[in-house]
Length: 474
Image (tube, rainbow, N blue to C red; front, side):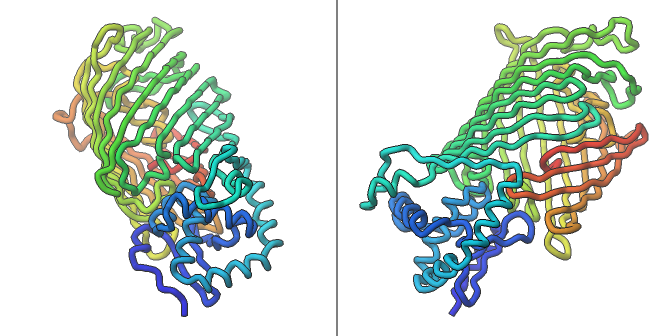
């Protein structure tokens, strides 16, 4: 008789089911189902992974853990969790599924070739001489995958930076769940972006888990040869003035999860800004604006996050609320002194069928005086108001709202219709409902296991903007 999985699985967004032959399946991304026995490998590999898993987990596993590993795309370990769950539930059903696996070798090879065609290279290895601790031989334990590297080429387009190209590499230790992320990027309009980040544990793997302490380190260099500046305020005029701008940023944060939904973070960051080669004869006197020339910024802050989303990559339901307080400190070698308060609220609701999602967001930010123009609240670019140029409206306070309807088109291809609106003020106490900036648009989404491809076309009273990038806007 098929085994009935607990009802708690549903709240994690997983689609788990048993058929008469006891196949254990889970759903990833869209409606595509991947039977676990297609991902395990040979019988010998399965035995080795089981031995290591029993040693690490003491033969205890939960579907929640399997869900988290699936979310992080760590297929090998996720399959071990699924296998242990099957063994604990119905050993006879597991054997039947394993026998069927051996009759599916040809199909498995086809799936492997298709996966390689998605421009993702996965490399697996294990440290030599490591023992599983359950009486396995050395050759078995040494073959257990503990490290993976994914290399992905980057190709995108943005109305503000032109055609972009580069590469991203992500390395993950499957045992310690630490991750390393490198990005090398350039564009035809002169952007250069180089970034490195380290997370322990990986951000995707810790989503929805309770953890004592997590660390994130980011080192980032960004250079824009054709940066925008339109002045400060909500009624500034459009212009075509362009100038180079550089920034070098170092950020370190530590977070603690009090529950699987609520976490708190403390962070510190240092930034070097450089703005140069602007024309003093421009109608906007950039030379007199705070932030022109060379300057250094030191910030400390705290934030709290409440997150019930079922998936951080492509959420179908849930909410995310983040509040943050940040302070810039004018210490030795640093130039700025100001405070910033921010609220980010995002919500997601699946409509009449899977894939149809109504998504909305509300961002509010207020700052005290004394900030460089690079740190001011902004509206306009591919991540805020998609119908306006980057940094089109700047000031100390901001309100931004967006509403999206995401819907399926065919297979992994989806569409979106969106509206963005907002404005800036000199302070929230001066806020009003007049002179808001609106844009509307539509776009396409392509859903893969590790990322979402995004094409957006935004339309406002100042023109049309096109953005081809990765990841949902929110």
